[in-house]
Length: 165
Image 1 (cartoon, rainbow, N blue to C red):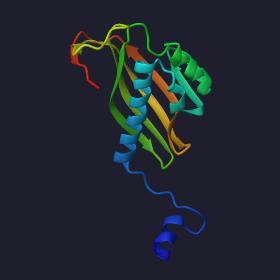
Image 2 (tube, one colour; image 1 turned 30 degrees about the vertical axis):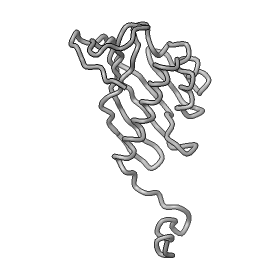
Image 3 (cartoon, one colour; image 1 turned 180 degrees about the horizontal axis):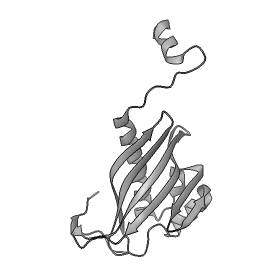
Image 4 (cartoon, rainbow, N blue to C red; image 1 turned 180 degrees about the vertical axis):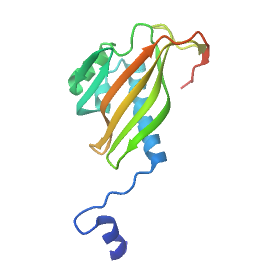
């Protein structure tokens, strides 16, 4: 690296923040979201707290939980799965605000199946909701700082193809 390039990247008073690459950030955040729901669906939420920052907030169903310990209890006790859910699927992730170390995003959450049933090739969604997430880049990776799951409702009787793993 040349001295000019090094100076450009680090600046005079410290590192210069680079503009975020939307495609890369979107892919990274979708990986975080997908891994979280996979842990909840397949492992009972045992590792769910590791996807959140230490001071994270989780809100849904008129309840609010603060910090990794409470969030871990929520997911481990299946409170976030609901009584009719055997599979979570996330779709339509949109980045609303993107900063170098903080991102606000919204996604659609589809919850499939009856509790305890394996997902079928086609089924009606049990519930549909919006998930508003605030992510922060900390501990060398993207973590969920704030999550609000809202507008859960029973989906229409339309059959949808269930994405296979």
